[in-house]
Image (cartoon, rainbow, N blue to C red; front, side):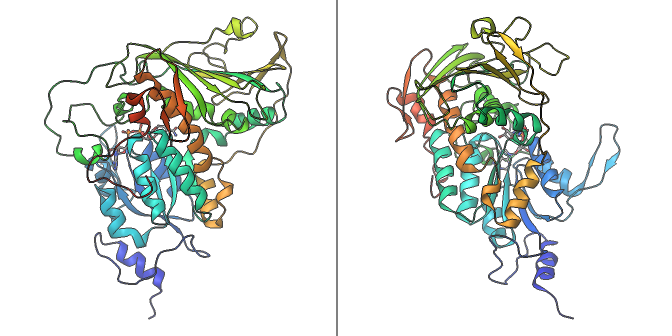
Length: 467
Ligand SMILES: NC(=O)c1ccc[n+]([C@@H]2O[C@H](COP(=O)([O-])OP(=O)(O)OC[C@H]3O[C@@H](n4cnc5c(N)ncnc54)[C@H](O)[C@@H]3O)[C@@H](O)[C@H]2O)c1
């Protein structure tokens, strides 16, 4: 019986750590009827969603799994129990699993075509860049990267490689609400835009921010590879609760509420207005800390003009942790300050308001249609349904078709926006100071301390080419 190359690869995959000696298996895109082989880094939390959404595409085969938390891998490969104690069958039995993505890349590099990254923010860039360096397509969670420089480099390297298909994990951009809002902006309904106000209720009640670095250390749990979690970030002892999830408030690993939610809220306005790099940033924090982002903050970023903004440029005003814009001063009619709980427009969760020369637009985060106001009155607009797509599947389809431009959040675009968000987030390290951003070097001209986070020095032994 003839064994096809495909069957040979699949057979050998069933046994972890046994490797094909067949050379030339690497593919930029799969050939007809063959699947896109995906390696998954970070399998808990949003990583589970990313894994299941990606694996749900009929052209995808999950080739390898990686997590620094052994419990996540065990659940996927060996099965788990639900809340009532009933056994849940393993979803990916026999798929090779690793704690260290570098080992997975080295040992399995010829058996996957694409990588999905859903780790803590500080490891997005090293993993995504290492994957691109190997010629792999990449889906990477938002924010695309932690520092401004990393975002810039991911965007540049993606742009320089026309065959690599990339997507940032801002799945809300694929919803009809955000698509229609984008269309209104494209149609110039509110004219050239001069201000954006954006607010979120995070981090309050979601994850800790504003605290000093905890003293001492705790015993590292047996399920955790702590040194691998730290990765490129500077070494520190383990303290209970650092991971999963809560890492996002710590400056070394996350990007705070601004980086976390800004991607979901500002992507469409940012892309439609073709915003470039900020000129200045100023953060007014509540309960600032050197270890964590503030408990709450207001951040102002100034941009130069684009063809879609007012000729004097644009000001982005960000509020988080329970702060809101002054809706009345912006010019919204009474009762329209983002709506009320229980309605489609929910003020408490967050929102975006764009102030144009001809009107004001309330831009939804999701699950609501945009609203437009002119001269202090709501304008009757009939929402037009937009084609709904699945963000993960859009990326898989683009990989299969070799169409990088089919991805709306490709790294060239996502990296540009996330560079701005990193600048805004890291401005918290210099409370109250107007920081001059030097886009040529991805640093602040007047803050070495905040610049050190925009362009980090990686820990010894963690050098990644192109970063
Ligand atoms: N698009 C969205 O709607 C959305 C929602 C939530 C989170 N996210 C993003 O997803 C990412 C993960 O967030 P989360 O809330 O799921 O965090 P989490 O801590 O709950 O999950 C991260 C997973 O990655 C693993 N991990 C961490 N570092 C790793 C490494 N170096 N190598 C391998 N595995 C590693 C963790 O053990 C954990 O299983 C973040 O970047 C976050 O911004 C996106």
